Image 1: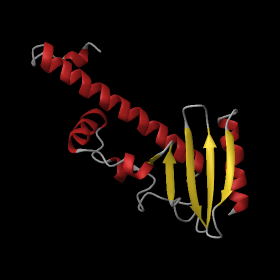
Image 2 (image 1 turned 120 degrees about the vertical axis):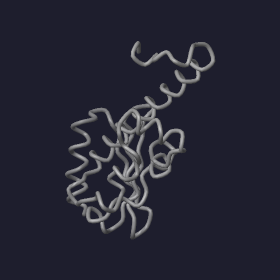
Image 3 (image 1 turned 180 degrees about the vertical axis):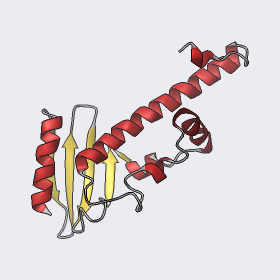
Image 4 (image 1 turned 90 degrees about the vertical axis):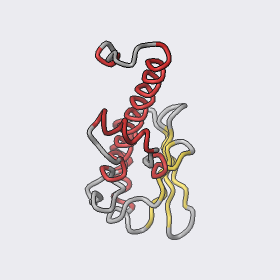
Length: 147
């Protein structure tokens, strides 16, 4: 496992040149890797001995648990489906047991998190525009064609 992690760290450093990576040995079972991409973005991975055959036990983006970030409210889920055609982020994520393969690396997980964070931003913008539209404009106007 250590050889694989070392290879993955090299890939992460190639992508994020100024990143800081810290290994924390929590106990004999888990290794915690913290990756500080910049002042606003950091990731924490709690990896067990079965990695890469099982996905990391815990993944955090900042202080938020990534698995909880993917559980959307019904309102967000409806907008997600309208914007992307995806019904559920969990089902399309690497953290679904059916989607995990040993070929998935920490870098690909980070890229998925960043992609999903952009989707969250689009959903929030969509909902804000919907609220503005309902408050100040006629509901029949398709404001999204102008954005």
